[in-house]
Amino acid sequence: MGDFGKYRYDLQQKAKDAKKKQKAVIWKEIRVSPKIDDHDIETKIRSAAKFLDEGDKLKVTVRFRGRELAHPDRGRTLLLSIGDRLKDHGTIERQPLLEGRSMSMVMNALRRDAALATPPRPTAGPPPPAASPGTPKPPAATPARPAAAASSAPRPGPTPPPASARPAASRPPAPPRAERPA
Image (tube, rainbow, N blue to C red):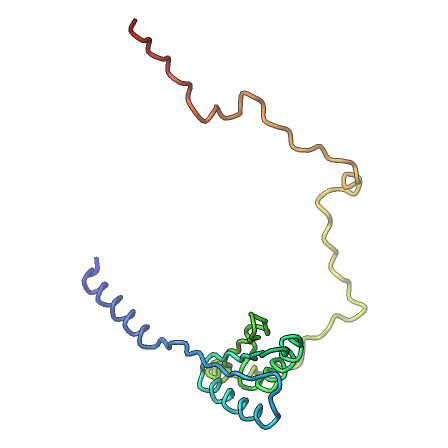
């Protein structure tokens, strides 16, 4: 028998340590317009790359004004090109979606620690020798049923259980009513 108090204390300490190691998800947003200039988009991409490198989630939003809403394809291509240019820093979590007068896309930071933690796979020696053409092959698995029984004859469907095996009604019969006094 162990000490229950010590067990509870250990559980509390583990929960406390796990809580210390948690990191809150921070959202950052970059807003652009469909008529953005090349230099301006470079500046936005630089700040977006900084956000993603810090491990934050990024929401890239294109805001349409006036008649710009008639060309949502321009906003979609702009968002996809931003996502393509940021592929070294993060992955697209949600594809561009038009919501009202704005189209947004969500990007998630790449996990740098997971990428660094995986060691490269060691290359093994030469591959195992392939079977030479003269060696016999193992027999193929035989079917469980003979070929004659596997014909396309129609199978009978499931038969309903007999009436005696069916469950009784879900409610018991009502008790007889009491007679009224005259």
